[in-house]
Length: 441
Image 1 (spheres, rainbow, N blue to C red):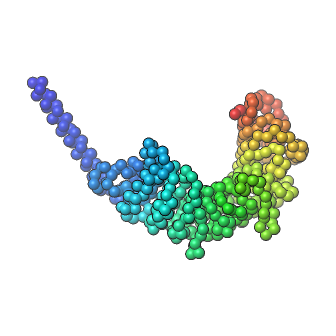
Image 2: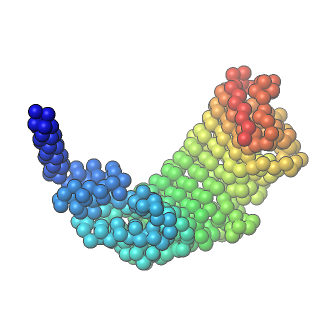
Image 3: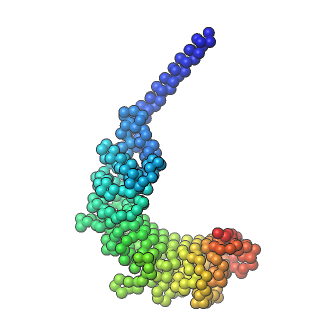
């Protein structure tokens, strides 16, 4: 009887397994019969490696993943056991080959963000293929090394391109280039481009909203003329800059790097000197502004006004980066911008630690303490990297004494112990409701 019971149990389990397998197959068939646009929407949400694994489900699924409308090739696509950069590219190439062999229909988005050493002939061919497929978002991010490759001219014939990010290429516009009518986002990183080419490219993107320029090569002058721009970020070396009449600009972030690793000297075009007023005099709509000390020094090469002729009435958030309290030009330009921002609510200052004492800077900051201007809307202040010099302390006093509605001040000290909150409470201040947060690195 026991043997019969065991045999019956096995038959029931087998039957259940068969039923489960049948149900699984029915579920696969049900999903397989969904419209392709629905399947595509589902599959593009998976990492590409997982989407490719659906090829084992059935013969119908073998090449479905190669027909996706979006391809993101990142480190997840490469087995973790492969560390050699050239071998990692071979794995990427296998994916590209399968897609090129089997893809039908459009490709809307491609992103390459994998640690590898690309074969530039392969990459060139793939970019041409994407252009033929009507690519809308082309994103090529950092490789392991920079070896500039010539961007194929076919990229500039993409009428649907709305998002373009390039890394490590040589960008020259073909004579046939008429513009990118749909381009809203442009990012260039470690790209070889000359000033005239950059200006022509930006001018001929009528709906461009977001521009990011990082570590550009052989760029002397940054000339940005585009009335539709809303966001600009520049982290690069240059000799001159003009933001034009970009009246819709809401966010500007500029960090200046030295030309060829040395000291940047101005070589203004048409004899114009680059000053605070020339660069920011027409940008009245900015609500977020971030500037590095080196750029502030660069702008302050002549007399710095106490405040700009036309104030930043819309500016709500200001970041001053890598500020050197021994730099008279940098501090003078910083104070000028602060005094030109009557509605500022949020201030972030990151300090480049320096023990040097500058009497002109001390005199300037002390004089501001006696002036009658106030930050009437300033609520939040964060200062990072101070080391406790007297000039830093005078700057803190200036902010506290002229901010009547200040709610919080965060101070991060770079060396030694943090400043005690009880000590800060004893400092003269315009707002009696300030919450102090004091930290040490």
